Length: 214
Length: 215
Image (tube, rainbow over the protein chains, first blue to last red):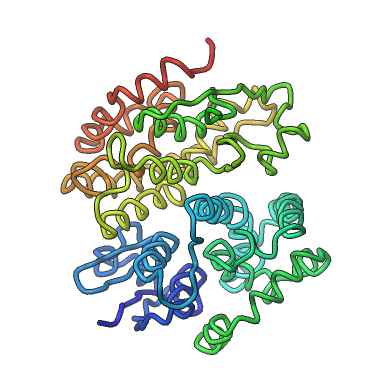
C-alpha cells in the first residue's frame, strides 16, 4: 500500500518525509494541500493534523504527523531497506537523535524566522522585520560555527555515515542556499560547504528537486 | 562509572532527570553556574558546544539535547521501569509524534513566557509585553488541541505514559507556578486531569524535591 503524504512538495517540512521515502525506496503519493489558500487550517485537514500544519501521513490505518517523527518511524520500520538513516548501535542512534534535536532547536529555530522575513513576507507584501533579521544573522553565524567545528572532525553530523541528522537539515538548507542572500555563511565555511555539496549531490535529493520543480 | 547530568537545577535537564528516575537508573548531577557564565567556559563547551544545559556523560560517551537523552535512557534501560517508548513500532511512532509536538509547537511559546516573565530581569533584557500576550494566545491554541486529544486519550501517545508526557513536565511546572498562569491548565478539564496525573508521579515529585532552584 502506498503511503499518502498530505502537504506540498515545495514546502520544507513535507520534504523531510519525502526525502526519507526517496532514500529508502518507499512508495508514496503526495496529496496536495494548498498552503497559499490556507487549506491546512480547514476542518478536513485538521482531522489529520490538529495543529493545522503539514505534513501528515496516512498508511492504511496508521496516521502520523510531525515530519521528524514520521521520518524516524519509517527509518525504524524499514531499517533494512535503502539508506540506513538511524545508525547501528544505541550510542550511534542517540547521537543522530541529538543532531535532529539540534536541527529543530538551533538551526530551524533561527532559519525559519529568517526565511519568513527574507523570502515569504516580501512575497505576500508584508514588511520584513529588518532589526530581527540582523539579530538572527548574528545568532545563525554562531550556530554555524558549532556545525563547522563538528564537521571538521566528522564527515556527517552523526559521524561517518549520512543519517537522519543530515537529512533533517536539507529542506531548510535549500532555502538558505537558494532563496536568500545568506549562502555565503555556508560557502565561507570549509567543512559546512563540503558537507552541503556532498549531501545535496545525493540521488534522492536530486530526485526530490526534480519533483519539486522550483 | 555513574552517568552524570550537568545543570540539574534548570528546566531542560529535568526532562533527562525524570526519565532516569522513572527507569531507576543511578546517576550523579553536576551543577552549572549560568550566572557565573560557567556554560561559556571551554571545559563546558567541550561537553555541549552550544553552551546550554543539559549535557550528559555516560562513561566515555557524551550526549546533549534533553529529548535525545530521554530517548537514549528509555532505549538503553528498556527492560526496567515503565516502558516509556510504547510496546510496538506504531506505539513508538505516536510517542515520537507527541514528543516532537512538545518540541516544535508547545515549547516555543512557553519558552517565551518563561524567559520574559521569569528571567528577563535576571538576564538583563526588557520584558516584551506584546510577545508575552502573543505567546499566551499561541499556547492557549495549542492547549485547546491537547484538550480535544486528551478527551479521547488518557496520555498523549495512548493509554500508557511515555516520554511525550514527561517532556512537558519541567516547563509546565513553571507555567502553573512562577509564571502564574495555572488557569491555562486548570480551565481545561482533560488537560488538567492529565497534568494532575503526570505531575503527581513519584519520579517527578522526587525530581522537584531534589533539584529545584534553591529559594
